[in-house]
Length: 167
Picture 1 (cartoon, one colour):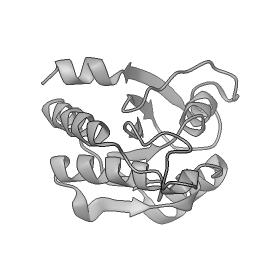
Picture 2 (spheres, one colour):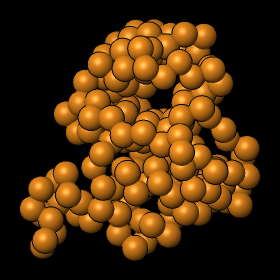
Picture 3 (cartoon, one colour):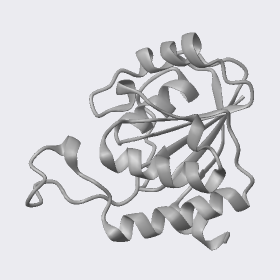
């Protein structure tokens, strides 16, 4: 199975007027534009998966919607609180195991440092790998079975700039 891990695009900064709560911050117009280019790159890379799980925070949801539209997966886009800031990676994995049973792959869209911590646990069994996932960055992990702990191999990690150059 393939696990794609995507960090949301460029969002309105913390403390911006009109967005008092972190959970309200959407993508900026530049973030929308760059995310659309990243989604086109993902399509050109022939990325496919069974479902896309996303944080319900607007910046992640918008990112996931742009990608789902480009990949023709709008019906396969689902929200989960376990990907929100402060979510629990163990509960996310349990939710995937119990509710989703992906055959080919899954994409998750969320936030830092959550995503890097999750990748660290899946790659090494510990939460101390120093991984940087830039806004709009995408990682691909290969695994036989998704469990909380060391179960995956990193196939690649791409910056947004690298992906956009593919289009």
